[in-house]
Image 1 (cartoon, chains in turn orange, red):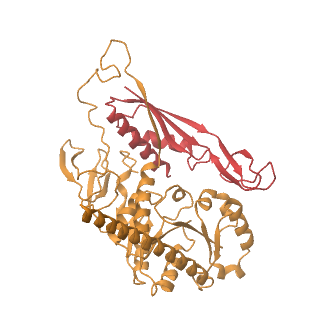
Image 2 (tube, each protein chain N blue to C red):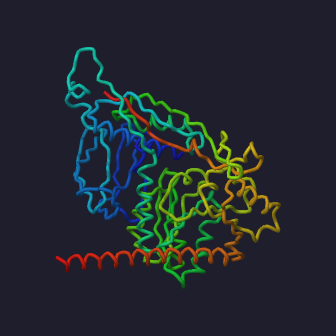
Image 3 (cartoon, rainbow over the protein chains, first blue to last red):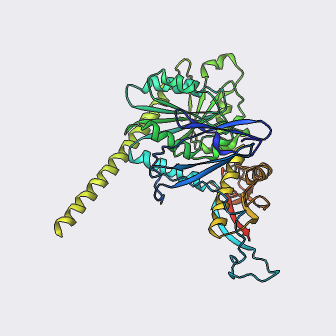
Length: 347
Length: 113
């Protein structure tokens, strides 16, 4: 978040998208945020026609400039702007549509909505898209330095001849990780979250639009290295995969239970180093299962390749299940076409 | 600090509702935050003050209703209070507890005028 003006949401950057706006504040601080225009993003829950609205910016020297802003595609962003504070004063908008002096118009309005409702709706749209296309999506979460990217590179090397793969890389800054992935020959998109500490369903929706993963492919999301925040944000993945490396502590699942509860797979990475460390792998697994008895655990080493075959087999089984879902949705569509044709013929 | 994202989510829900109701300002925002949810209420308060600055929600009082945690034992079926997101059943002495209350993060209601 910008600590000068409190604007928090504009720091996410998706590689190659949009252009930067620069703002100068009264104290001379300059910050810029990117600004994408051409959205082609299919979140289908009642979004209506493309919306155009006017943005206006006031600069320190008092000049105001405004520019129209058209969102294209089916995806309409709901930017909430508090207009009208300085406008007309209407005392007739209360429950009685009238104003009696001294009578407060204050009233309670029930909302009863989940704070993460919007994110969850984006995630559900992503998941539906993955299922319809038979794509198997994994969200890899861990603390920084557990070897997520090395593990991804090794996994890709073992699978790239069998299945199409696309990767989303989340980091606060730099596109180093996406470049490491691209060097393996698979497409990767870097999302920089700026000051943000996690990826969300909306960012991943945009990434899916950009990467256009093939039907029946593997979609890997490397979340921002952080064992706290990504636990709360569903991205539409089929599984959260938590990575714990043996150079960390055995009690990490107990210290960060939210993440190990949100995950259903845990990879214990860097196991080739176990002979040189006092790390108790059995204790680490037992701690993880105390927090989440349903965890599937693999002991692996991205460096030496030990244990990777079991993990790769697990992914292959997931891909197979997703292809089954894809075939089902194709069959259902074919049946619907046949039924509609029958109805048409009967007219 | 995902509380910043959550605060922005709260602001969005509140602003949408307030605008739909034609409100001039928001006086009170009531949230329900479960004790087992991934939210630190004090961090959320701090972020709420930051993100609402300059909006019609700016001067609203933020009331956070604590929802106590509870869980069901998968072994003996007892429902017991939970202070953390995981735990072993005190009734049967070892069953895994599945949280059944206290994981919510909701905007309950607002007061507008």
